[in-house]
Length: 194
Image (cartoon, rainbow, N blue to C red; front, side, top):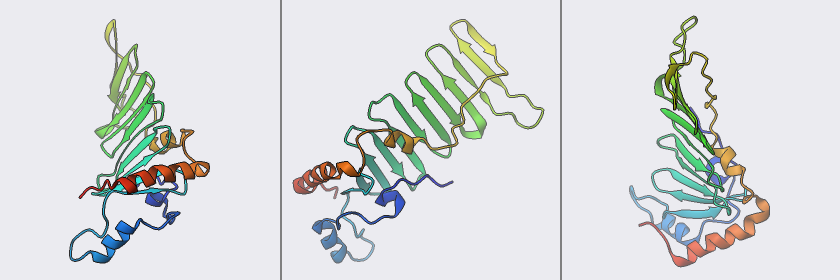
C-alpha cells in the first residue's frame, strides 16, 4: 500500500523554493557516524503553498493558513488530517480507515469490519465472506438492535487526507509570501528539537 502523494517536497519530490536554513547546512557538514545529518524540525514552504514541517522518525506535518492540517507517519504508513473548519477529519492506516464529516462517521476496520454512525443510528457489520454469503449487518437506533442485511457502507479505500487539506482556502502559490513569514518566525526564535 502506498500513500497518495501531495505536491510538496515531502511527498512530490520537487525541490524547495529556498535552500535549507544555514543551521541545517552546517549540521549536515558536521555530521559524523550514525548521527542524523538534519537538525529537526525542518520548516519550509512547499511549492504547493503549504507550510511543511519535517520531524524525526519519518513524520511530516503539512498545514494551511486557515488551520487545515495533515500529519503523515511514513514509517507506520499512517495519515491523520482535519480540515480548517474542524468539521471533517480522517485517519488512514492499513488496519483502520475512519472518515468523519459533520455528524456522520464511517469506519472500515481490519478483517472487513465496517461501521457507520450518525446522530440517529449506528450500523455495523462485515463484508460478505464470499459469493452467496450474506453480510452480517446490524442497525442500532433508539428503538433497539435489528438485523439489517441491506446496510450500505461508504468505500473508504481512498485516502481522504489530501482532499481535506486541499479543501482549504488557505493554501496555494499566491500565499507563499505569507507562509515564508510564518517559517521565518520559526527560524528566528530557534525552536529546534534536540
